[in-house]
Length: 178
Image (cartoon, rainbow, N blue to C red; front, side, top):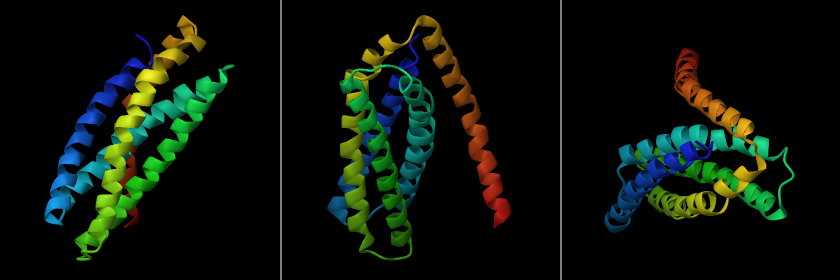
């Protein structure tokens, strides 16, 4: 199995969440109100699953190892675009989370920011996923030999095994401080 196969499988779950977010966005736009609980769940999903777990493996394993290779200019350009897109996704997710907090406090004008951030995210992820799946992941596997691909895949599995422990250690530490 190629080390990008689990990443591509993760894309399918991200796409399902984006569809649910798109449905919520349509309701919010039509009714000029949002379901803060759904927004909280979407933010958590994006932050933990899409960003820390999925983008974490891309950046901390795949991109790290690719940076050591003599890539074509096109592959290097795409990798740098993907990294910048991850940064923009984080910023937009923070914007969504902050606006949702304001909405919960009764600030109805934050609906516009929520709609703007959700619109960006539901437009962004399908394009981002397509770029990775169709134009990057498979072509860049040629830079690695069988052992490197196997080692990378094993590192991805180890990364996943630690994710839940990291998350809840952080939860406990945060609660301990409050």
